[in-house]
Length: 301
Image (cartoon, rainbow, N blue to C red; front, side, top):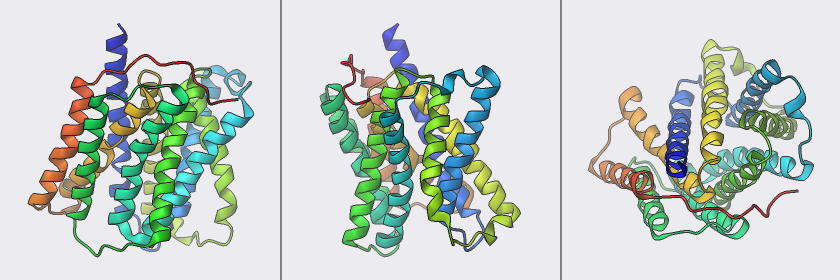
């Protein structure tokens, strides 16, 4: 029974990662001049607002009471920090390096956090799967071409994004042990959007009036935030933090394939090597990996 629950958790997280992988394709349809920071903030606000409406219509205000202040604020801060660090890091050091460092650092940080704070055991399968997937991400991203820029601050921001995502996963894992997933998404996203809202002061919002902008924001908020995290939180309830963060590497795999199918991008031979490595890493965790029993969480409050 526990094995079935773990397998279901793996597929839930993989589904979430594939939905996240549509983010780049969606932004490709946004009009020129769009602001990534505005999109990131609206994504959290719309996703959180949608889940909040669902929770209130279904259960009223009761699921929104009794939240631990420190843990809730920490989860919201980490998800807000990810938006800022990732977009700023990519802007400074380029898509290739920013993506590799941001995505590649997340599983490493997730494994360390899970080991330190939740006493998760990192087996050989996890190390093998993580190494394969990170290597595949690096090859896939670099094979896409373009200039490679190494900006120290940009690299540091990208690492910050990976660590923030892993920390968010760790903290919300603890919240899910006390609260239902939909309420957790609603509260954390709404608070995170409030934290980011001061950054919108003085930014150009005129591009939001275009129909394509509205469609992009709706897709990012409802599909890549609300729906994707609906799957992610349910998967996270069943598997370890380290496993969930590594499975999230299905995101760049999905993005690469959508780029070929919908945007007309071309993959070279090296790109297929990267895709094969990512797929091998994910398959290793999905079909050979088994989550180990967890000790009670020590992070919270």
